[in-house]
Structure formats: C-alpha cells, structure tokens
Image (cartoon, rainbow, N blue to C red; front, side, top):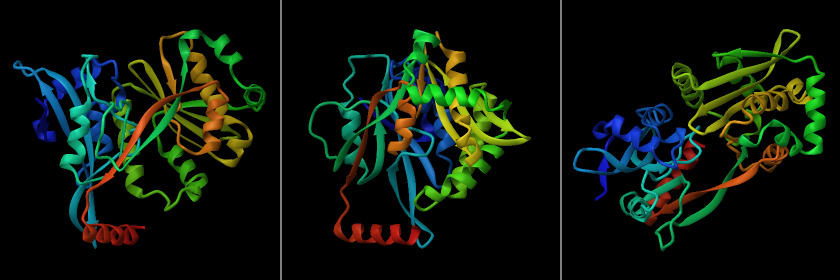
Amino acid sequence: MIQTLTRHQINDSAWNACVANSPQGILYGYSWYLDTVLPAPSWKWIGLVIADDAGNYLAVMPIPLRQKRMLGIPYSWVVHQPFFCQFVSVFSSDQTLDPTPFMQFMPQHFRYGSTFRIRQLPDGPFSFGRVETRSTQVLNLSVGYDVLYQRYSRDRKQNLKRALSANWSILASTDPEPLITLFCKNHTAGIDGGVADWAYAILRNLVAELSKRKLMTLRYACRDGRMEAGALFVSEGNRVIYLFNAASEAGRRGNARTLLVDQMIREKAGMKLLFDFESPEKLSIREFYKSFGASDEPFYDLRWSRLKAVEKIARTVVNRLNS
C-alpha cells in the first residue's frame, strides 16, 4: 500500500537506501538533494512510499511542489519540477514493480501539474493533459577514450584541436561565483523572463552541498588572467552529470567548454559510467552535445489541469502578474 509522507515523516536513511539500491537510482532522488533544490518556504516535496513491516522502504517517488502566490499571498501548491533536477523516478530494487499506482496518485490528489518529469511511463490511461517525450544525451564511457574520440564529429575534433592550442589553463575550484557571473553576463539575455536571484541562491547552496559530499568537480578555463568559461560536473553512482556551465564570448570563440568537457571525458573514460549532458530542448545546444557522439536517453514530461474555469482565469492573472 502506498503511503503519502510529508517531508518530516520521511525516514531519510530508508529513503536514500531505496534510491541507492534501485536500478533507476540517480542523484536527483536523494533526500538531501531534493531538500537543496526545493527550499522552503516557496518549495517543498512529499514522498510516495511503499514500506515493509520493518520500516524498510521498498519503493519511493518524490513529488516536487511549488507554492503559487496571488498579489504576494500564497494560495496553493502545484506539482512543479525544480531547477537542477532533470527528472525523478519510481525508485525500487524490485524491477517487476508496477509504477502505475504512483502515476495515478498525482492527478487524483493534485489538481494542477505545471511540469513533472519522470523516467518511467507505464502503459494505461491517465488523467494527464499532456505527455511529452523528452531526452537527455549520454555517452557510455566504458568503451575507452580512443573509441569515444573517434565518435566525435569532424567539427568537434577540429574545435578540440583549436582549444588545445589556444593557451587555456584549467583551474579547479569550489567557488561558484565566477561561474554565476559568467552565466549572468553571457546567457541570461537569451532566457525568456531572465533568471531570478533565488535560482542562483539554490545553485550556491547546491554547490556547497555537493562539495561537502565530495561529489563535484568545478573547473574554469582561464587565459590572460581571466576566467572565460566554467563547468560544473557531478559524479554520483554510475553517472557524471554536466550540471551547469557558462562561457564568455572569448570562451566560446576559443572552444573552452569543448576542452573542459573533453578533459572530463578523458579522465573518466574506461570506467563503467555514463556521461550525462543534461540536455535542454534548445536545438543548437543539443547539436553541440551530439557532436561528442552522445545518444538520446528518454524521459517524460507530464502536465495536467483539473482546475475549474474560475481557477483557470485566476491562474492566468497570476501568471501575467508574475511575468
């Protein structure tokens, strides 16, 4: 039987053991990670749990929630995927487990799902207004660097050669501020609505948490005393996740991110790992990642609404006020 547990009711040890022992186990599912990317008071998460009599968790699924406000007054919680959390799963060591009841729970208990991204999609009818197939792009690093390099596109090989001859120095760091500055100055103009300060606060806290757990690698490409590009990688379980990056115009022209990505691939090649580019939907970025030989790994974006007409009007007003 599925239990619905608030954050305070969740046994972290049992939850994290279930995630770690699951074939679907991934960084985004751990309680400490969810706590970091879903900070109070505007965010929270609850857990769907199947437990045995001894209190061990046999299956879990997190549901991320965001508080909506009207004129500054909080009025409802909606299902909403947070930043830095590409997707979640129904986590269980039982590979025969049917995830259908977990899926059915959400539209039954939450009337509005802005976006919920999950790796599994069982067969059967659901009350989701929209189900879209998304994908991240991954490299199987176990084949070794020579094979991986041969799968780079011709342009990627040429740009890597240019980067290697561009006098870049690579600096390891634990300080995210230069990376955030690079992103603010060079990328936010292309993002509809910009990026709110709270998103950077989450990133800072996430870097601190990842650093404390020795899971991150943060590197900058420098030239003439200036940091021109940065890349944040997270290594956990069987994945290396390319979590965040930014580059100046000089960094882009000098192919600095190609160098940073290739360096990490080179270091991890031959290990039983996947390199996950955490690909956005933007075609130009996906083509860049594909040029490293990456292949698609699907997940699913679920959205739904059971709001009444007056509630839909109110939500439209709120969205306009918040835009």
